[in-house]
Each structure stands twice: as structure tokens, then as C-alpha cells.
Image (cartoon, rainbow, N blue to C red; front, side):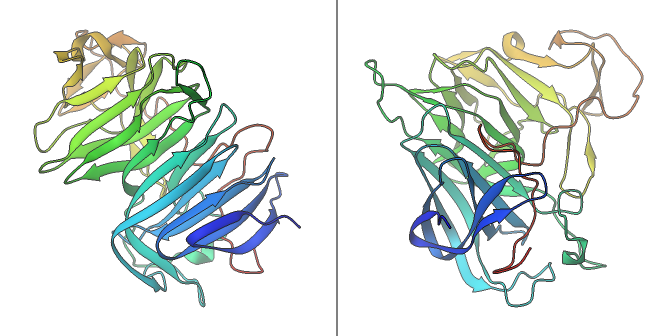
Length: 326
């Protein structure tokens, strides 16, 4: 039996959990505001906590390096207010995720637990309102300086079910000097008060196109989103973890690069599109300026909510694991 490496407030509650699809992972809970994990070779480590809307959030990490979850406005451990899990307690708070020592094998996925991605449907309570999104502040990836130019590599960042927001510091994804292979998917990014919105990677990144799944990138504080390391932003549809469809949104924020507004040059939609009450309906990739109207025909492209880990592991569907059980 292999056990995930943990430190700080991270505690492994189950190890070498086999899933029906062949994947193997270790389950970790937090017992305080800051915990760090590493993944066993060929396996995934899952860290679970509650966000400030009381959704269970899963952070799934595989490959090289270590991942740290830090909670602000934290409380707990406590029973989950919206789920049926007797005897299981989670920390609750607004999370920041930091990854160090990564390489091209490293992948991270973040999502909330809802009816469309949970194997155990008895988790959910009738009459309870679920947010259906993982609310966190940021993901920061620190370069491992493995290359002569001081950069390092990274696999993919799958956060199509994540709504990033903060009132100070940065919010979004910040990975300077990290050459991300991709894919990179976010749900939305919103900066309030003094926060700065960022989608920032090394110029040597290979993913080229960043997808925004159902969000609009509207910034409540009016700040421009600082970007680097990719060519285009593709506005696509998405879903909540409850299965609520989110149509393709028209861009509501300004995209800035090297001090210049590049919104019209980098934002694409998955179709010839026209904005109707803030929603873009589309059928083929075109730039922001296109105004060809088409009829709504339903979901065009649903962003992944389930996690897709790095090779060589088999993708593991999101499930909740109780200590000693499935």
C-alpha cells in the first residue's frame, strides 16, 4: 500500500482507492487552514474541502511536485451543511492553490461535487440549494527552474467548473516562467475591490488557446485582465456540477497584454455569433467583431467538470470517499 505524502494540516483518510475505470487515488482532508500533498507515481491525490457556499470542492493532483491548499476566512473541521455524510468533517474557506516542483507530467483539476459528477447520489438533500461551482481565489504555479532559461514545464489546468474571485492580491491563474502544455480551462474570473485578475503563463507555453466555460470575464472592479503566454481566448459553454447549462457568454472584460487592450484581437467564439441579452449563440469560430446571427440550438460545447489526470493514470471520475469506504 502506498500513501500520499502529506504535511501541514493535510491528513490522508484513505489510500490506494481503486475506481471502476481503473484509476487509483489517495483521499486527503484538511484539519486546518494549510495543507500540502504530493502524488504517488502513477496515481492521483485528491484534497477535499468546503468553499464559502458550502459546496464540497475537489482538487485532484497528479505528477511531479507538490500542491498546497491555503484557506482564508476558514472554519472547521465541520460536517458538510448540504451533503449527507455522517462522520465526515471538512475545513471550510476561500482557497488559494500553490504548486511547486512540477514538470510536464503534472496536472491539476478543480471542481465542485454535484449531482452530475457524483457516483453516490444519496449525498444530496432534497430542498437544498447548491451553488454548483468551485469558488476559489487563485492557482499559482512556481517554476521549478529545470531549464537553462529558468523556466519549467507543466501539463494541464482543468478548472472549467471554477469561479475564481478575490478582493485583494491576484485572482485567476498565475504561472510565470511555467511552460504549460495544456489544456487550460476556467469557468470565470472576477476581481473585486483591490484584486488584480490574471491569466498569466510563460511565452513558451504550448496550449495556445485558453477556454472560458460559461463565464463572461466581467470584472466588478473595472480592472483589465492581465494576460501572457497564449494566443487566444475561446468563449465556450459550460455546466454547473448540478447539470445546469451555461450558454456561451459574450466577453464583458478587457483583455490586456503589455499595457495594451487586445480584447478584439484575442477573443474568439465557437461560432459566427451575435450577443443577445449578453449571451452569444454560435456555430463556427470567429473573432469578437463578427455579427452574424444564428438561432440557438442548445449546448454547443460542454466544458469538462470531471477531472482528467496526467498520464499514465486513467481518468478518475469525481466521487466522495469516506474513510475506509467508497
